[in-house]
Length: 267
Image (cartoon, rainbow, N blue to C red; front, side):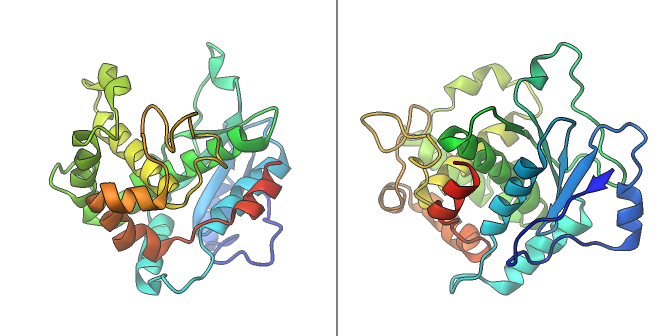
């Protein structure tokens, strides 16, 4: 297994780990993930065919979420980063279309990495807003449904009284968040994780004002058919519980990625 190194002066808390972790990550018996990089205690594994440039840019995108600003609570950020390291949280990256193969296997990461991941990020043939949207969406799924879930009780998607769940229901009850497309998953054990991670993604994307940059804005509205509002001011005025969730956690741990930097990574 080959470790790549992010090409950025600003990378912090990354490209490292103890020797035991490095030895475990070098166990490449199945060769499912021939390359990987580390960014802010998140290991990002890549399948065969993913370009080194794309893998590096996924890491740089994640790194943009960890720039310093005056809102950051260093203790909460450290708590999150420590959890991601100790719980071996990871992200998978593949080539768009590979999952359509009837023989597709989602792959097994080397030990000690196990279940603490969500979706794949797919490298598309073209860049632009759709590719950026793909990267941001699935990084935020990992952040919320794995990292924050493992770190803070308020992000427990299994608890219907958690701050996350109550904020999501606020958006559903107001007709802002439409979960009807997930009805066929109600009997699935992952249903609660899916509807909460999608809610958290839409909420953060709106608070970061990235609907246009990521190609998620529908014509005639600030949001889209699934989440109808897409600006920070709308979240603040219409979803007070969601805005509080954002202020209490996301704003204190993560920075808003700069649009100009993101557009350079995925032109």
